[in-house]
Image 1: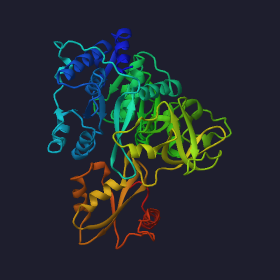
Image 2: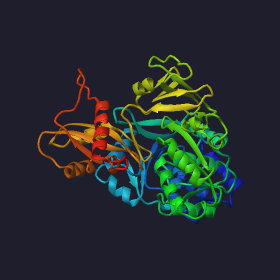
Image 3: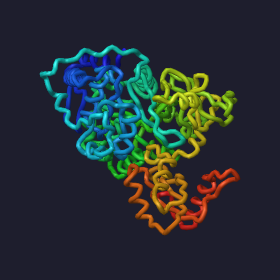
Length: 511
């Protein structure tokens, strides 16, 4: 079943209801949304695309993002959403890797791709066809539950991007998990999208299309506490997905106001560590509107859930312990803790978090060996370390060894290290994460140079090759990196040195 049948159904049932909005302005009703998707699918077919072809989306949040996404699905194609904050060369790698035929962009991202886009991929920065009523509406293309629908690029421990193959079945069950465990959705309920539609927010728009809700992109295209509060008050019963840094910003804004945020239903937080003190602070300021999810690109938003009723159950004897967890397994998956050899571990024993079920990816695009390493005996090995208690609540003890999560976005040290090592005066580099009060973590580079080089020069060098948010925010120059007998850099020691330096400098985790 093609996911686009959901939009076709909603156009029939909720035709006159708002489907898409930019700020307070309705951008499309459900009838109009479906009409543009059907016309967009026809336009795509006229370009010679066939079901299963890949189409990139490299643009900022806007209602047209969703109109283009559903045109892709309506035509039976595979959407490749790309983080709008990436460098053009990084986006181009993904388009080349999956042999994308087209890539939809906005003007700024067309400029970013210039000079990098693979020759076989057309870049489309004009989307007038979405409103071209002369295009005959295409029928929804026939697709099976297990055909690819969304190719989500993530990175492994090497930092080299890999395409996570998500099928219609995966996405459908992700939406059902939201409706079953996070909250129900009624026609007219609002889903705000201050977070990138290329990531979690894009997954969470699905249940709102199914149930006739309205998907609202802030007019600013990003996150602002006052704007979110105004949109929640306008659209009512409004929810949104937020990285922990966004929650903290909203809390800081709301604390300065004289009244609670009106119209707020649920703030679903995830994508990075949310410390217990921050959860308690957010609950005090925002009220009973918090829910947490834990997942990763290979099982998006769908491994565990800490729903509102658990967060509100202050009478439970282990309430604080549960609040510090990431909740319990969502209904469409099994969660277990395994040893390195795949042996299941007992309750309370720490080990690797593993998951299997209807939402686990089909595999990595054209990377069978990486797929075989990650999915063993049907279990997705997340690379995260955690433990389960006797009630099934999962507490994460550590993330994959080197991954940095800053502002809810994954940053892979190897990528940054490789960028630094391309500088002629950098002999060695090792990148770690350091605590940051607002962003969760910040990127710190420990560098051995072969000739004098300034921080400003390294910063400019990184900006030429990787996305701005990935670049180091602090440099530590060192004569030699600490290594073990096998020549492997001891990042644990670097983290300890960084903590000691921050303490000696009197620096807080805020910067």
